[in-house]
Length: 324
Image: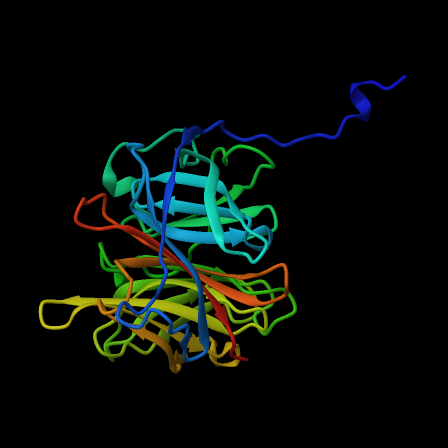
Protein backbone atom coordinates (compact mmCIF):
# COMPACT_ATOMS: atom_id res chain seq x y z
CA UNK A 1 0.00 0.00 0.00
CA UNK A 2 1.10 3.53 -0.71
CA UNK A 3 1.61 5.15 2.69
CA UNK A 4 2.97 8.36 4.15
CA UNK A 5 6.46 6.91 4.12
CA UNK A 6 6.38 7.00 0.32
CA UNK A 7 5.64 10.72 0.11
CA UNK A 8 8.55 13.09 -0.54
CA UNK A 9 9.57 15.21 2.42
CA UNK A 10 9.12 18.93 1.87
CA UNK A 11 11.17 21.18 4.12
CA UNK A 12 8.84 24.07 4.94
CA UNK A 13 10.00 27.25 6.60
CA UNK A 14 8.07 30.11 8.12
CA UNK A 15 4.83 30.89 6.40
CA UNK A 16 5.08 34.42 5.05
CA UNK A 17 2.51 37.11 4.47
CA UNK A 18 1.30 37.37 0.88
CA UNK A 19 2.33 40.56 -0.91
CA UNK A 20 0.62 41.80 -4.08
CA UNK A 21 3.15 43.46 -6.40
CA UNK A 22 2.29 45.51 -9.48
CA UNK A 23 4.71 46.01 -12.35
CA UNK A 24 5.20 49.06 -14.58
CA UNK A 25 7.49 48.09 -17.47
CA UNK A 26 10.66 50.10 -18.13
CA UNK A 27 11.01 50.33 -21.89
CA UNK A 28 14.44 51.97 -22.05
CA UNK A 29 17.43 52.13 -19.74
CA UNK A 30 18.73 55.45 -21.12
CA UNK A 31 15.81 57.86 -20.88
CA UNK A 32 16.48 59.86 -24.06
CA UNK A 33 17.56 56.88 -26.17
CA UNK A 34 14.54 54.55 -26.21
CA UNK A 35 15.94 52.24 -28.89
CA UNK A 36 19.41 51.89 -27.38
CA UNK A 37 20.04 48.51 -25.72
CA UNK A 38 23.83 48.16 -25.78
CA UNK A 39 25.83 49.59 -22.88
CA UNK A 40 29.41 48.39 -22.97
CA UNK A 41 29.46 44.72 -21.97
CA UNK A 42 25.75 44.80 -21.13
CA UNK A 43 22.58 44.48 -23.20
CA UNK A 44 19.47 45.89 -21.54
CA UNK A 45 16.78 43.20 -21.58
CA UNK A 46 14.03 44.03 -19.09
CA UNK A 47 13.03 46.42 -16.41
CA UNK A 48 10.11 47.42 -14.22
CA UNK A 49 9.05 49.77 -11.47
CA UNK A 50 7.70 47.55 -8.68
CA UNK A 51 4.96 48.76 -6.36
CA UNK A 52 2.95 47.33 -3.48
CA UNK A 53 0.74 48.61 -0.70
CA UNK A 54 2.16 46.12 1.80
CA UNK A 55 3.69 47.91 4.77
CA UNK A 56 7.02 46.07 4.48
CA UNK A 57 7.50 46.59 0.75
CA UNK A 58 10.59 48.46 -0.45
CA UNK A 59 13.96 49.14 1.18
CA UNK A 60 15.49 46.22 -0.77
CA UNK A 61 19.18 45.85 0.00
CA UNK A 62 20.15 42.36 -1.20
CA UNK A 63 18.96 40.34 -4.21
CA UNK A 64 19.39 36.86 -5.66
CA UNK A 65 17.70 35.53 -8.82
CA UNK A 66 17.36 31.73 -9.02
CA UNK A 67 15.88 29.00 -11.25
CA UNK A 68 16.96 30.56 -14.55
CA UNK A 69 15.27 33.84 -13.73
CA UNK A 70 11.99 32.47 -12.45
CA UNK A 71 12.46 32.94 -8.71
CA UNK A 72 13.70 35.89 -6.71
CA UNK A 73 14.92 36.27 -3.15
CA UNK A 74 15.62 39.56 -1.44
CA UNK A 75 16.27 41.08 1.96
CA UNK A 76 15.34 44.56 3.11
CA UNK A 77 17.24 46.81 5.48
CA UNK A 78 14.19 46.65 7.76
CA UNK A 79 14.90 42.98 8.48
CA UNK A 80 12.48 41.25 6.07
CA UNK A 81 12.79 38.28 3.75
CA UNK A 82 11.13 38.41 0.33
CA UNK A 83 10.58 35.44 -1.96
CA UNK A 84 8.48 35.14 -5.10
CA UNK A 85 8.12 33.94 -8.66
CA UNK A 86 8.97 35.90 -11.81
CA UNK A 87 6.56 35.13 -14.63
CA UNK A 88 7.82 35.70 -18.18
CA UNK A 89 6.64 35.41 -21.76
CA UNK A 90 8.27 33.12 -24.33
CA UNK A 91 10.95 35.75 -25.05
CA UNK A 92 11.81 36.10 -21.36
CA UNK A 93 10.18 39.52 -20.91
CA UNK A 94 8.74 40.26 -17.47
CA UNK A 95 5.03 39.60 -17.02
CA UNK A 96 4.55 39.69 -13.25
CA UNK A 97 6.01 39.11 -9.81
CA UNK A 98 3.71 36.42 -8.44
CA UNK A 99 3.19 34.46 -5.21
CA UNK A 100 5.34 36.99 -3.37
CA UNK A 101 5.68 36.45 0.36
CA UNK A 102 7.51 38.16 3.19
CA UNK A 103 8.47 37.33 6.77
CA UNK A 104 10.88 38.71 9.36
CA UNK A 105 14.49 37.52 9.32
CA UNK A 106 14.86 35.63 12.59
CA UNK A 107 17.99 35.78 14.71
CA UNK A 108 19.77 32.85 16.38
CA UNK A 109 17.12 32.77 19.11
CA UNK A 110 14.34 32.43 16.57
CA UNK A 111 13.00 35.85 17.47
CA UNK A 112 12.74 39.23 15.76
CA UNK A 113 14.95 42.12 16.77
CA UNK A 114 12.79 45.24 17.06
CA UNK A 115 15.48 47.93 17.04
CA UNK A 116 16.72 49.17 13.66
CA UNK A 117 20.28 48.76 14.92
CA UNK A 118 19.81 45.01 15.19
CA UNK A 119 17.97 44.27 11.94
CA UNK A 120 19.80 46.32 9.30
CA UNK A 121 20.20 43.39 6.89
CA UNK A 122 22.12 44.70 3.90
CA UNK A 123 23.29 41.74 1.85
CA UNK A 124 22.20 38.27 0.77
CA UNK A 125 24.06 35.41 -0.91
CA UNK A 126 22.71 31.94 -1.73
CA UNK A 127 24.46 28.73 -2.74
CA UNK A 128 22.32 25.61 -3.04
CA UNK A 129 20.01 25.40 -0.04
CA UNK A 130 22.15 27.68 2.13
CA UNK A 131 21.94 31.45 2.47
CA UNK A 132 23.98 34.04 4.30
CA UNK A 133 22.85 37.52 5.36
CA UNK A 134 25.03 40.33 6.68
CA UNK A 135 24.03 43.13 9.04
CA UNK A 136 25.64 46.50 8.58
CA UNK A 137 25.50 48.09 12.03
CA UNK A 138 26.15 44.87 13.93
CA UNK A 139 28.74 43.74 11.35
CA UNK A 140 27.74 40.12 11.75
CA UNK A 141 26.96 37.38 9.23
CA UNK A 142 24.25 34.78 9.79
CA UNK A 143 23.55 31.56 7.93
CA UNK A 144 20.13 30.14 7.05
CA UNK A 145 18.69 26.99 5.51
CA UNK A 146 16.60 27.69 2.41
CA UNK A 147 13.32 25.75 2.65
CA UNK A 148 11.55 24.30 -0.36
CA UNK A 149 8.49 26.36 0.56
CA UNK A 150 8.08 29.34 2.82
CA UNK A 151 10.86 31.49 4.23
CA UNK A 152 13.88 30.63 6.40
CA UNK A 153 13.56 30.04 10.10
CA UNK A 154 16.13 31.00 12.72
CA UNK A 155 19.64 31.99 11.72
CA UNK A 156 22.96 30.77 13.00
CA UNK A 157 26.13 32.73 13.56
CA UNK A 158 28.81 32.61 10.86
CA UNK A 159 32.29 33.24 12.28
CA UNK A 160 33.64 36.68 11.41
CA UNK A 161 37.15 36.80 12.94
CA UNK A 162 38.05 40.25 11.69
CA UNK A 163 38.60 43.59 13.48
CA UNK A 164 35.16 45.15 13.73
CA UNK A 165 36.66 48.37 15.03
CA UNK A 166 37.77 49.02 11.46
CA UNK A 167 34.15 49.04 10.26
CA UNK A 168 32.23 52.31 10.48
CA UNK A 169 28.81 51.92 12.06
CA UNK A 170 26.69 52.94 9.08
CA UNK A 171 29.25 51.98 6.41
CA UNK A 172 30.02 48.42 7.48
CA UNK A 173 29.21 45.08 5.86
CA UNK A 174 27.18 45.89 2.74
CA UNK A 175 27.85 43.13 0.18
CA UNK A 176 28.13 39.34 0.21
CA UNK A 177 29.05 36.91 -2.54
CA UNK A 178 29.80 33.19 -2.73
CA UNK A 179 32.40 32.13 -5.31
CA UNK A 180 31.43 29.33 -7.73
CA UNK A 181 32.73 25.87 -6.91
CA UNK A 182 35.74 25.04 -9.03
CA UNK A 183 36.68 28.70 -9.48
CA UNK A 184 39.77 30.42 -8.10
CA UNK A 185 38.10 30.95 -4.70
CA UNK A 186 36.18 27.65 -4.91
CA UNK A 187 33.01 28.36 -2.93
CA UNK A 188 34.54 30.87 -0.51
CA UNK A 189 32.23 33.44 1.06
CA UNK A 190 33.27 37.06 0.57
CA UNK A 191 32.05 40.16 2.45
CA UNK A 192 32.69 43.76 1.43
CA UNK A 193 32.19 46.97 3.37
CA UNK A 194 30.26 49.95 2.06
CA UNK A 195 32.57 52.76 3.05
CA UNK A 196 34.99 51.56 5.72
CA UNK A 197 38.46 52.56 4.53
CA UNK A 198 42.05 51.86 5.53
CA UNK A 199 44.79 54.50 5.80
CA UNK A 200 45.24 54.40 2.02
CA UNK A 201 41.55 55.20 1.54
CA UNK A 202 40.57 51.76 0.23
CA UNK A 203 37.60 49.62 1.28
CA UNK A 204 37.88 46.83 3.83
CA UNK A 205 36.81 43.45 2.41
CA UNK A 206 37.05 39.89 3.72
CA UNK A 207 37.31 36.31 2.49
CA UNK A 208 35.54 34.32 5.21
CA UNK A 209 36.92 30.85 4.39
CA UNK A 210 39.26 28.87 2.17
CA UNK A 211 43.01 29.28 1.46
CA UNK A 212 42.72 33.06 0.96
CA UNK A 213 40.80 33.62 4.21
CA UNK A 214 41.65 37.06 5.51
CA UNK A 215 41.34 40.78 4.84
CA UNK A 216 41.82 42.38 1.44
CA UNK A 217 40.94 45.82 0.10
CA UNK A 218 38.97 47.18 -2.85
CA UNK A 219 40.43 50.32 -4.43
CA UNK A 220 38.00 53.17 -3.77
CA UNK A 221 37.65 55.47 -6.74
CA UNK A 222 35.72 58.69 -7.37
CA UNK A 223 34.04 58.66 -3.93
CA UNK A 224 31.88 55.64 -4.80
CA UNK A 225 30.80 53.19 -2.07
CA UNK A 226 30.02 49.49 -2.50
CA UNK A 227 26.39 48.38 -2.30
CA UNK A 228 26.47 44.74 -3.52
CA UNK A 229 28.51 42.09 -5.32
CA UNK A 230 28.19 38.70 -6.99
CA UNK A 231 30.47 36.32 -8.88
CA UNK A 232 30.37 35.62 -12.59
CA UNK A 233 30.29 31.92 -13.56
CA UNK A 234 34.02 31.95 -14.34
CA UNK A 235 34.91 33.27 -10.89
CA UNK A 236 35.48 37.00 -11.41
CA UNK A 237 33.43 39.34 -9.23
CA UNK A 238 31.08 42.16 -10.20
CA UNK A 239 30.75 44.99 -7.68
CA UNK A 240 27.81 47.39 -7.65
CA UNK A 241 28.73 50.88 -6.44
CA UNK A 242 26.77 54.05 -5.68
CA UNK A 243 27.57 57.73 -5.24
CA UNK A 244 25.26 60.55 -4.18
CA UNK A 245 26.46 64.12 -3.84
CA UNK A 246 24.79 67.49 -4.29
CA UNK A 247 27.33 68.25 -7.00
CA UNK A 248 27.05 65.01 -9.00
CA UNK A 249 23.57 63.84 -8.10
CA UNK A 250 22.88 60.09 -7.99
CA UNK A 251 25.21 57.68 -9.78
CA UNK A 252 25.69 53.93 -9.98
CA UNK A 253 28.33 51.80 -11.62
CA UNK A 254 29.49 48.21 -11.96
CA UNK A 255 33.17 47.22 -11.75
CA UNK A 256 34.77 43.83 -12.38
CA UNK A 257 37.43 42.35 -10.10
CA UNK A 258 39.54 39.43 -11.33
CA UNK A 259 39.32 36.36 -9.10
CA UNK A 260 43.07 35.87 -9.34
CA UNK A 261 43.59 39.29 -7.72
CA UNK A 262 41.57 38.49 -4.58
CA UNK A 263 44.25 37.48 -2.11
CA UNK A 264 44.82 38.08 1.57
CA UNK A 265 46.42 41.48 2.17
CA UNK A 266 46.06 42.64 -1.45
CA UNK A 267 44.33 45.76 -2.79
CA UNK A 268 42.21 44.88 -5.82
CA UNK A 269 41.01 47.13 -8.61
CA UNK A 270 39.17 46.64 -11.85
CA UNK A 271 37.58 48.34 -14.83
CA UNK A 272 34.20 50.07 -14.82
CA UNK A 273 31.80 48.11 -17.03
CA UNK A 274 28.67 50.22 -16.60
CA UNK A 275 28.21 53.79 -15.39
CA UNK A 276 24.83 55.53 -15.06
CA UNK A 277 23.35 58.71 -13.61
CA UNK A 278 19.85 60.15 -13.56
CA UNK A 279 19.86 60.36 -17.37
CA UNK A 280 19.18 56.63 -16.99
CA UNK A 281 16.34 54.76 -15.32
CA UNK A 282 17.96 54.21 -11.94
CA UNK A 283 17.27 54.97 -8.31
CA UNK A 284 19.29 54.10 -5.21
CA UNK A 285 20.63 50.85 -6.67
CA UNK A 286 21.59 48.45 -3.85
CA UNK A 287 21.15 44.87 -5.01
CA UNK A 288 22.96 42.90 -7.74
CA UNK A 289 22.56 39.26 -8.79
CA UNK A 290 24.30 37.20 -11.48
CA UNK A 291 22.34 34.27 -12.92
CA UNK A 292 22.01 32.02 -15.95
CA UNK A 293 19.00 32.24 -18.27
CA UNK A 294 17.27 29.21 -19.77
CA UNK A 295 19.24 29.97 -22.97
CA UNK A 296 22.52 29.80 -21.08
CA UNK A 297 23.15 33.56 -21.16
CA UNK A 298 24.84 35.23 -18.19
CA UNK A 299 22.38 37.74 -16.76
CA UNK A 300 22.76 40.55 -14.23
CA UNK A 301 19.81 41.90 -12.25
CA UNK A 302 19.76 45.10 -10.19
CA UNK A 303 17.24 46.41 -7.65
CA UNK A 304 16.97 49.72 -5.83
CA UNK A 305 16.35 50.61 -2.19
CA UNK A 306 13.56 53.21 -2.19
CA UNK A 307 14.07 53.90 1.54
CA UNK A 308 10.26 53.54 1.71
CA UNK A 309 10.18 57.15 0.54
CA UNK A 310 7.34 58.18 -1.80
CA UNK A 311 9.79 60.33 -3.78
CA UNK A 312 11.79 57.22 -4.74
CA UNK A 313 10.99 54.00 -6.61
CA UNK A 314 11.79 50.31 -6.50
CA UNK A 315 13.57 49.89 -9.83
CA UNK A 316 14.29 46.38 -11.11
CA UNK A 317 16.60 45.97 -14.13
CA UNK A 318 17.89 42.99 -16.12
CA UNK A 319 20.90 42.95 -18.47
CA UNK A 320 22.62 40.26 -20.50
CA UNK A 321 26.34 40.25 -19.76
CA UNK A 322 28.45 39.86 -22.91
CA UNK A 323 31.93 40.05 -21.40
CA UNK A 324 34.38 37.30 -20.51
